[in-house]
Length: 91
Image (cartoon, rainbow, N blue to C red; front, side):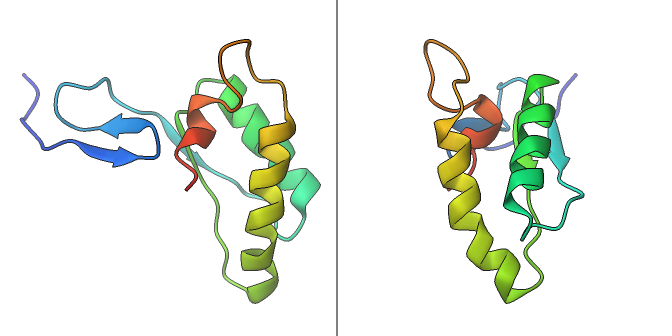
């Protein structure tokens, strides 16, 4: 039996309560390498990852987040969505 928890929203992903368990992953690339990070996010999403975490330990990594979000939105994920469920959690 699952323990009752409160629901939180991470973008469009609902976590907790009676929602399905969310699969999460984290990129291993240098976040400042936008192309490699976007490739890894797409790969994680294609393997069923619901939430993708990206580290930004340096200023250049933090600055790259905007470009990563932009590039994720350009990818044709599905006919009904502009971004995969994994990337909807990206605020």
